Image (cartoon, rainbow, N blue to C red; front, side, top):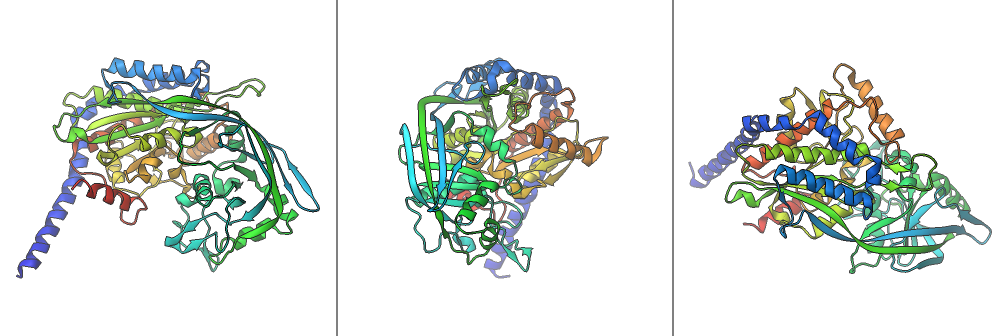
Amino acid sequence: MHFKTFLNIFICSLVFIACSDNKEGWEKHVRDKDALSAQLSITSSSLESHITTLSSDKFQGRFPGTVGEVKTIQYLIDNFSNMGLQPGNPNGEWIQKATMTGVTSELRAQFITDKERSVLMTGKDIIGNSFVKKNKVNLLNKEIIFCGYGVFAPEYEWNDFKDIDVKGKIIVVLVNDPPVTENGELDNDYFGGKAMTYYGRWSYKFEEGLRRGAAGVIVVHETEAAGYPFSVLQNSYKGEQLTIVDPSKTPLSFQGWIPKSTANKLFSMSGYNFDDQKALSSKKDFKPIVLNAKFTSRINNRSRKFSSNNFVGKYEGNDPVLKNEYIIYTAHWDHLGIDRSLNGDQVYNGANDNALGTGIVIDAAKAFSKLKNGTKRSILFLALTAEEQGLLGSNYYNINPLYPLEKTVAVINIDAMGNTYGKTKDLIVVGKGNSNLDQVLEFAVKQDRKYLVPNPSPEKGFYYRSDHFPFAKNGIPSLYVGGGVDVVGKGKDFGLKMQNRYNSDFYHQVGDEILDDWDFAGTEQDARILFRVGYAISQHTEWPQWSEGNEFRAKREKMLSKLD
């Protein structure tokens, strides 16, 4: 046999053996007796206690920069101190201060043509603001350009900005990805097929408008395409809006949303039919159109600078080398605060979103503290601020990491997990197939005779809507799961009914509180599973990897190549 051929076979054999070892290693570690004993400290009663406390009226809806934040951070410090864990900030503190600007905007806006004027009712016909550092931010008779989905994606040969300069103008764009079709069927080669890509998120569309020098970006909201009703935006845009202080960037003069009813009016004023233009924008040869209507807005801003806090706890590994590698559990502690304009209940308690996730992180930390033999890698417990304002705390950490991102092995994120109706036979993986973290999770759920299912609504882009995403953008494999729907003894129809009830009646509503029919047995089971996943990764020398073709894989490979 030729030596080169022999060498190739030998290398391939090593790769095969390594892959086999990885599988056996992860499976072995999720069944480790030390972990199985430690996980018993995660209980329904302790989870219920955390969630009850954090979502109580005393915590005032946990809005950043308020008394609610002070109480929340102190609650986290007290719990982690009692476990005997270390402050996670290398400076010896439990917190990472994230400098922010809070802006309260009073908006007046209208569309104008030579023949017609449409004055928009703020909160009903339009919502939005500006983070420009001025007390008054006025846009007068700005040209409006419809730019389809507002996407520039060379890898798909897609450009919604063909032959047009949007600098200093207002662009109107659609939510979600272009639903590229061929013969009436979805083309799965474009934009992930049914699944939303980051190009579909409103945050990308604002970023792209800013890159191109637009004065403002208006996103047309449609409930099915966005994955939530317009009321979610209305509630989120009441009162103060937060942003990270970034002196290198000049913000958009206007960023906001309009419902379809307002879009219909805007297009009809300009002599177009909105649905017709939306259909045309789904084709690759779409070109932007200049609308006849102009946009005028007047914004009065009140602003303040303040520091909010990411909470960071640490469980240090005991391997001399691997202890400098990190697994991070993330959950956002914040919610929407108080709305004084409401009659009756005014507190957005955020029990499911995300007192539940924060409680799971606390109990996961407690389980690690109960290990007799410790872990090889170190574990960080990161309770993040201002997720509800656009993942600000997570973005801040990724811009200012306390530990090197290239030494961060994986992220396990818990956000509005939603399993408050009993044990389930399944567990939903948001972004299933993104990485081999699914494999570790599958080994863990089999111990509870559960099975994994993909997110049933990938078109809603949930993977891009929570705190793990800034880590994923930086190349770090990130796991994000949701509670299952195949409820033991009650079936899938019941589970779907409960999930739909939450989404329609409680998501970002003051009613997101602990209800009489909540059952924490499933929460306990899923929290234990996520603990075992983190434990298995902490014990095995292999690094989790993105799947072939994943949009974040190249970033990770480039990052790790610098360590060689």
